[in-house]
Length: 141
Image (cartoon, rainbow, N blue to C red; front, side, top):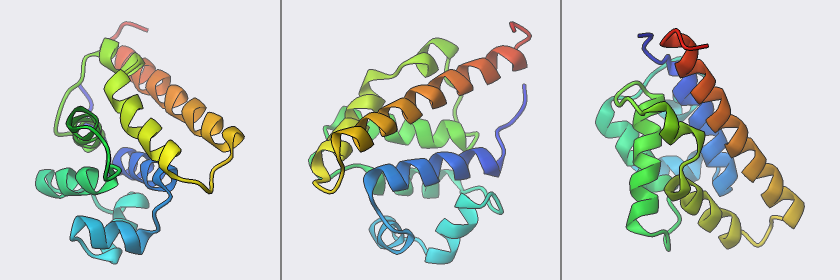
């Protein structure tokens, strides 16, 4: 099995951060990590330690998100950083993860309905990409 690269976590992080409407600085402050670290994670120059990935995921959750939505963000962060394996069926659609992002979309008054739908589509595309990637790694393509 192939271990995810820093680039995979970086792509996940950048998508999640922008979907939440947070700047690099704001996320760094919320997560308790440096701006430089967030930038290095997003550009794939550095993969986070497990605890750092958990802190970042928790910081990405909207303040009013349910605990299950927060847990889903942590699971997604850990999986993209290579710290957890997720069965393919969970990557194809994760309603708890969707709930966390949905809460983020709805709490941002600056997003139009079209913006929200575009973000939802990006999340669906990510699920399909990850599921296909796992199928290929497991020889089930």
